Image (cartoon, rainbow, N blue to C red):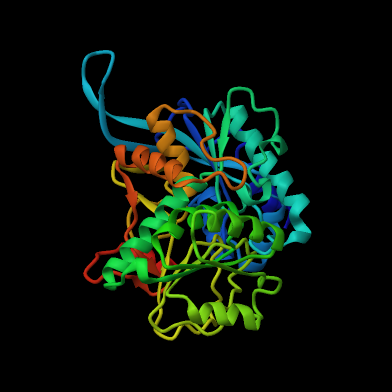
Length: 408
């Protein structure tokens, strides 16, 4: 096994990238992420090792991955639909160039017991981005959860700024809820909204954006004091709110969470869970359910009884997205082209805009005004809500999807 570890971990140092037809370029942005499944991790390692090598067996991948340090694995180029004049007077579309840096957090080590080890991995990935000279860095998945928006946990940042990307994630979740309601002929203003993981940065942002648009709000999270503060904030704006602390054991829903689930017309699952383990209990057969977790929140054994489920927080790049080496369909494992999680797209959009600033940081600062501003920036560069889909495929009839979806 030692030779296999060496061949993967040393195939280019942490500040180098094996490229295909792409030379050394400036680094406008960097994306820090990790894989949510062993299958995805195996595909990443296969590309890194090269086509000439035989794919590793699953048990060996699980042995190797924890030994791989955070490192840049590919160049990323994102295009805008906005054009500008070059120095030579030509008109060309704006582009931004960056890196994807994998923290190589093992998919089965997201629990609290590994928190210090995983923070060290995020710090290592951040150091790679800083050394590469990235102007702005987006923290994807558990990377932002581990840091909790406190960038003081990160290394000395010099001229590099960081964003959690949560503002654009909230924007796409809210847009997705509105779109699903329109598709189902549902009146959002007459609906009861349940947010699971309500006190997190994404959950609380969704609450602030959607609470004024619904009839009633139900909030569920682990921390009672944070729940009470969020409820008081919403109630101060005349919102009808009810709270419950029901996520101490996600795969054993309490009576209170079962009751809230049964009363909800619209559900957003945005809890920080290490695996898809959430069981909502009884759910209204007509409910709209958005799983916005990374990894996903909903357990495969959850009984939804005809509820309309979609994966939320995803956007689509219409100006073009390139990876070198080609990680298309591996780093973005979606049934539609150029779909990326909103947290990563925020950094790309800000780079295209030339706004290198920590747009999303801390917890609880996402407001409807900030979401609208971020959505405007993204849309200006052709980054929009992705077509809606779930584990069974596209939600909307007649939408073509890529054959890559068969890889899920």
